[in-house]
Length: 363
Image (cartoon, rainbow, N blue to C red; front, side, top):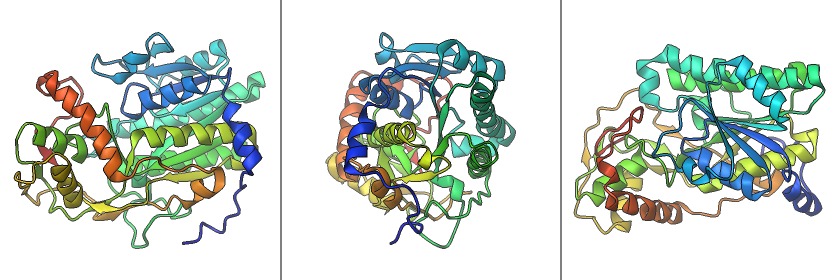
């Protein structure tokens, strides 16, 4: 399938070599750093030679971010605090912001739409406005990479989604992502702010303790010797991207933005381009864990779920040469290693505050 007319700037082989040094010595701010993607992204930035400041409302003891405590700076605060954001940018001479902070659970969004809108929409415009003021008032470059999702596209008949597919979320979480993306695009078109958008498929991997999600929920259930419970009928189709691969995509996008302004305003889909059904993921995990005897219990009760939703990532592959290093099977094998250690340590008995656990229920 052709990429959207491919009018985007394409990096040469020399460009791809040069951008690898673009983060060296730069100060970066990662919001929402203690979640699933944050620790992996911070690791990638540190390895690229960047100074990293991590901002989050809290730093739970179970987060993998604490493995980096001696390598980066932690700041406790809320992205809705516009004065704090601007202070951090000025005092630390921040060159680039990775805006990951968000309320990321569909179920919570359905129960608390207003809180989700505040976190995901107001938090985004605070980050963008702070970056604009940093440039316009202080004359300092401040790029922004917004963490988005395939959910921003909403429910559409034409699959896979391309970056120029309309943003038409209907349910609270989806709408919050559609709105944040449109606001980011507005800041580019209205103020020429250097901003890009990264739209990922379903992230999975080490550090995800939201057991209502299919991958961690199924793995831990199988490790416990329990039948996984699927709330849907098992047919919804999604694509899944290993979290380390997504972190490397974020790093490469930001490096490319620092090399040229020709990518500003662009959105990039990040996917392994292997859409599968919920039941296929569960069956693959049963196979990898040697527990094909544990037949999933299919409830068929899930609501507010889009039946088919997956991405085409040809654009980022062609533009900056990013490729996922893990197939779905390889990524799940890496995830299993981490959760096996987690269960062995007794971690499955730990119910951290603020993490939505659903025992062995998956969607």
